[in-house]
Length: 327
Ligand code: UFG
Image (spheres, rainbow, N blue to C red):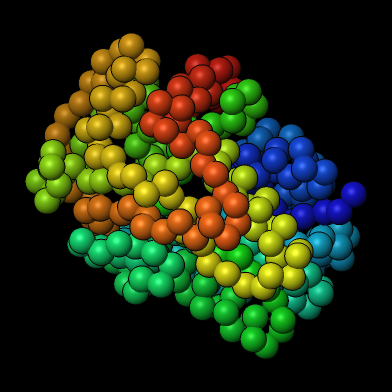
């Protein structure tokens, strides 16, 4: 069976990708330093502990496994933190990716699937965000991801490395079997924080800003189910292996929901109230991020099947209530 190197395979999205890769007949080799990932999320293939900043370790892993492609999920991904300590984001995300891309190119592994973000677009009011939209990130996280996109472009030209770049909108939900799910410490993402508040694991959800220029004053995001997201990665891999070349795809549904709408839906799905308090805006947050593209549907044949708020909250709630979440 062919191997795929999955950086960040012990993390939220990476662990779901490993499950999908295994189901599709690949061996997912997780490369992870466990800084934000969890060893017990590595259930679907071998584990290689290592740091992207350690080039020699990467070379060793490429030599040991000869992967046919890389799926690169490993990254620091907290928008707020990236505003406070930008150097960390440039070092780990950009420096680490440079090591990985060079190691892949030198090992002759020429197919690369990369997790980028809609945060590379920045805050563009009333602009339909498609893959050709200007990229003007307003936080260091988005800037670091845009730099990696540029890097992949340059290595495509010089080393024949072909990449599918996915610009994710907001990922939520969990595996339906609750084998893996979202687990960040500290948690910063809206859906798990709402569930924590519902469950009494925290006193209340703080709404970051109620004075945005949106119908209810709270930020609007385009939420996509993690299982739909990893389906797209499998299609991206097939695309590359069919020789279709480098391409960028947005991964979102095209529908935006405000923070209050997500809270209300979570209350409905769980049948519980969400304790909330209103707070100040969080630095680096954009007012509205919604995908305006159907390129992934049209070209990859991607169909986001579970990306309704109901499914995302229900699956996240099932994971939340499973014993796995209590670490
Ligand atoms: N929010 C709150 N209270 C909280 C947490 C979040 O009101 O306690 C709000 C945020 O202000 C934002 C929305 O909920 O409006 C979603 O916030 P998340 O932190 O869940 O997600 P972000 O939109 O900040 O960031 C996520 C990923 C990034 C990715 C980005 C693209 O974490 O990796 O989406 O927008 F780049």
